[in-house]
Each structure stands twice: as C-alpha cells, then as structure tokens.
Image (tube, rainbow, N blue to C red; front, top):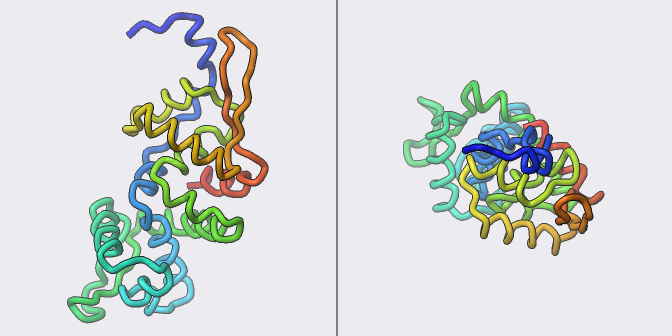
Length: 202
C-alpha cells in the first residue's frame, strides 16, 4: 500500500512507538502480569507458598478457574512451568522459566505501581497497557495509535472503547489540535505517569 506524503507527516514519528508484542501478550489475560509478578516475588523471597495455586489464589484474589487458564496461557508462552518433583500433582508448584525470570522484575514493578496508584483495574483491561505504552512518549492521534496496535489485533471499536474508559478514569487526556488536518490527540495524564514509566520497561 502506498502512503501519501501528507499521511506520513500526519502520523509522523508516532509510528516509531510500536507496542512490543510482549506487552500485548502480557495484557491479553487479566491475571498474567500479576501472576508473573507474584512468582518473581516468591522466587526472590524463597517463599514457596507464593508459587502454589492455593497461595496464588489468596494473594491475587483470583478464581481457581481463571488462575488455571492464566497458568496454561503463561506456560504456552514459555514464561512459567511446573516445578517437577515439587508439590502434589494436582497442586503443583509453579516457577518462572528463563524468559519468565527476565520479565519478572518488570512485571513486579508494573504490578506494584498499579497497586500503589490505584490502577489495578486499568491493567485488567486487555488494551489499556498497550495504549499507554504507545501514548507514553507524547501526544498521539487516534490514527497513529491504531497503526501501532493493529498488528497486535486491536479493532477500531476496542481502541475507542479503551480510550474512553481511560479518559473516564483520568488516565488519558484528550485534546483537540488545529494542525493539518485538525484532529484529536491523546496523552497520558500526570496521574498515569508512574504506570506509563513502568510499562515502558517491560
């Protein structure tokens, strides 16, 4: 597809803020990032109860079925595995794989930040983290945000709805700009900055 010069100028450098696929993968299921954060904490502290299903259910406040699905999702992505020879077969101990250990500290940072600033529900929405990641380096037009996230599977409706929810929660600001053509830009609010910085390090 040929892109006109005007289109290139309008989208401009914002296309460079493509969201890394792993950010979208971590946000795909509500409990994936907090699960990796908790397993990182368990690894650092040596507390094996934080790596077992019962402990994870209690610490995260997640339902058993949701946890089971999240565990299978994380295993499929190669972030965690069942610790062989440890725990009951029906209640295995979970551990981070090598790639999971690389992600663990950043996931822990994002989760702790979200808890601290009251943004846990933000992380629970599939597209919130990717949108904050794309908009994090400056004001972004809808078209540029869409261009950065379409390769990851976002739809116009999902983008519009998530931007609306983020605006209602005070995490994203919307402003009308003149320019050519005139339009609307989105940028993270001051309240969202700690979370934006943490997500950028994933």
